[in-house]
Length: 257
Ligand SMILES: Cc1ncc(COP(=O)(O)O)c(C=O)c1O
Image 1 (cartoon, rainbow, N blue to C red):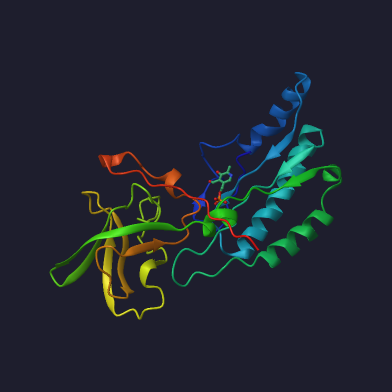
Image 2 (cartoon, rainbow, N blue to C red):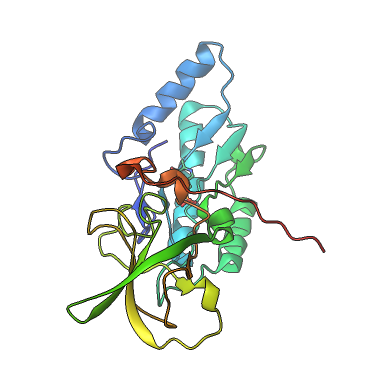
């Protein structure tokens, strides 16, 4: 379902108005009736209003509106949905100054909303659909410094990776203003940050930057750069074949108690 609302302040708006996703909500009751009359198994609704929201009030309001929409569509279709997928939108902080989502507040409000749900949704199962909130923080991208150069008073650390492995961290995945993902010199953890550097990839485009003017310990060719939050929209969201550079390796690291 393409709802008539979006999650306010979300990084990506997937619902509200003309959208390539879903069926416009006004057309849904008729469609449900046709599915049922045609003898197919109607499984319910999938309502996705947006992605990357950090404001709990915006998510709470979107979930409230989603429950209400599911109830009114069901009533208009004259059928109770076996399942309602309420969408997701739970964001993770990527940039300086952003706050972690208050998951307790969202959970409390959703429980209350479900307890008060309309009669037609009493037998319905509910799901939420999370992506980056589950896996984003689990990934770290490592790339090696191959050159250190000065240009017009600015220090550049050039790596053997870049935007073909981590498009989102380079700021080219729909961001309007480029901001740095959290980065570190992984081979010098704990050392004092003593200089401002710009960390770039190896592609011949100025779009290929991993960090602009960040403070790091003095790093040299051979050192490793870590880019955090690489577990979602990382390698699989990147133009890996662009400019024919080496592929990144993905490794699963586990811990044993
Ligand atoms: C239908 C649907 N489900 C889930 C997701 C995952 O979103 P996120 O990674 O922000 O949780 C998206 C992302 O756009 C989506 O379109």
